[in-house]
Length: 75
Image: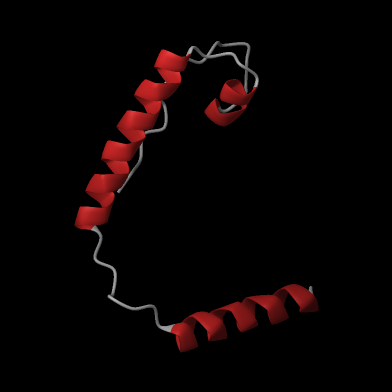
């Protein structure tokens, strides 16, 4: 699933992502609120469509994290 985060105005010469534009006060509240509501709808749809297991496989997740940690330490 692709989440379209382009639900905001971008000024061509301004390379800031939306969260930075919000932090800097470059957007009106109505724009931020509309983006928030749209993002909420997208995330709700994703949650309904997700085919995730009921419970996390902690052993597999831990093994993955240990492998990544070791790999990073070796480089």
